[in-house]
Length: 148
Ligand code: FES
Image (cartoon, rainbow, N blue to C red; front, top):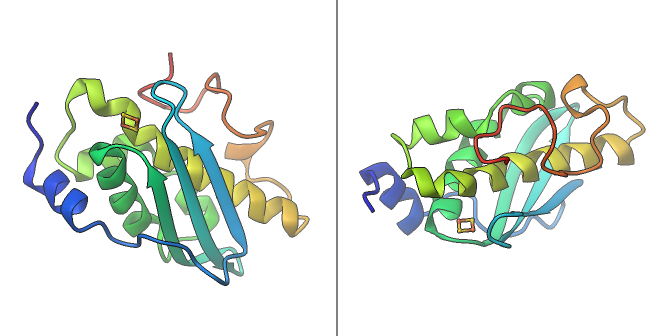
């Protein structure tokens, strides 16, 4: 199995790892395919993701994709963050082996779950991308590579 240098870099030195004490949005999801778990913490102010951390009980590909995903959504509005798909994250990494694509869904779903948490806690109308979503059931129409 071949990993790009960028995957190895983010796996060996993942960015934004850990917890955020002052998080006001937390999302936790499991990967239906392998059982791995991802937790994302965000500090959101005026719908802008000011800070973000992640913790995962997942494989190297999950760590690398989460690291890149946190970099991509930091500083973005929640609407912008919801547009960042796992496909975009994989592209940033220069690709992943096909059998590891499902790992990239963890970060995307945890980001969605955290934003859902933020909207619910703050009585905000759910962004269109999250309407009807009560967390990932694996059957939504998002452009997830790994959903079967
Ligand atoms: Fe579970 Fe990669 S094998 S996230």
